[in-house]
Amino acid sequence: MSKRRIEEITSKLAEPVVKKHLFELVDVEYVKEGPNWYLRIYIDKPGGITIDDCKIVSEEVSDLLDKEDPIPQRYFLEVSSPGLERPLKKDSDFEKFKGELVEVRLFKAINGKKIYIGELIGLIDNKIVITLDSGETIEFEKEKVSLVRRSIIF
Image 1: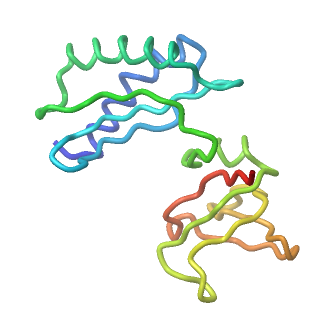
Image 2 (image 1 turned 90 degrees about the vertical axis):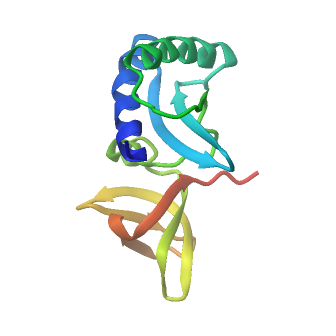
Image 3 (image 1 turned 90 degrees about the horizontal axis):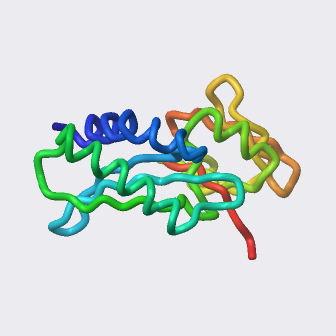
């Protein structure tokens, strides 16, 4: 089974559990690191996620995964917060984080740069639109972007 399919199945199993506890399912990823496979579920809520929140979701989703058994190999299940610099993946993320500072990473450089940081204007006609510090507004076609995440400056 493909990594993508495992992520889709896990998302469908996890979504009702996450919603039941009034959390948001931010992302699911299934990755191999060294010899081990990791199934990571990222959850969030206003005010942030606690260890107890992660434990509740982990236990409930683990039971569902054991019952459905969609993953043929051994893996480690991890449930955590996406962190302050969370990736923006869903269309709704671009609405939710409008006006915030984001980092846009490109697959291929534009004007010699692959990383842009600016204020998120939003997702308009499938283009990610930001305003740079210079005041210039720039658009990126979504399929040319490898990552968009919140950018927190301390």
